[in-house]
Image 1 (cartoon, helix red, strand yellow):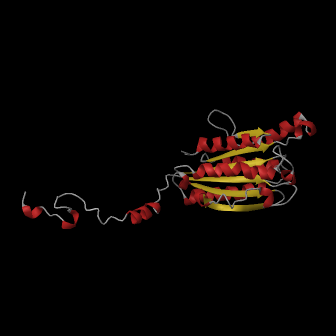
Image 2 (image 1 turned 90 degrees about the vertical axis):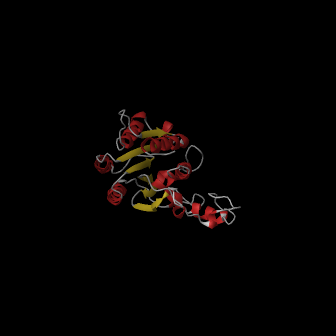
Image 3 (image 1 turned 45 degrees about the vertical axis):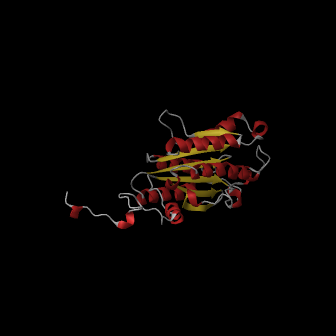
Length: 254
């Protein structure tokens, strides 16, 4: 091969030896800063929407001695923390709504990594203070947000809606109709949870409890095994663990 075709940059030679990189001027700090700004491209778009009961009964004492609204906050913290620790954390967007007589969006759609758990307040009762339990208005808003999300992220997108309530809905029929419409899109999953009151064992008949459970259960999606994405327990820790399981089932958490 002609010597004219062999060109060696003298700056890449150290100690007279060819083919060795000169690292004497390597700036490790600049390299580290550059890496810290590097983001792994999004592999998919996962929207997780929490729809949380803020009715009067959610201010009552739960099994832990705290209000059920506070228990909801403590359930959500480890869920968000789990998503933030995922290697695919930049793929998750979070949105939260509270409902009772009216509706309020209190966490706008945002990437999960941007949520500061030290400053966050996920207690729905601190966002909206009313005594009735109307979910349908919020569900309409959520339905619109999901459709917009799919429009903006046409490829590799899906949504999980997490509904949590502790009692009978005052607009069950309308809520059921909207949930049925939302679930008709196979990219969307609804997981529902009835946070039972510890006092129901003495104040609520078995038939009424079954009615509450079935109403909330019927709003949820059904998995490939014919099982609803639904859970009903007095213990808020079990609700939390089931929520994490539901997210893991339909999402790519690693």
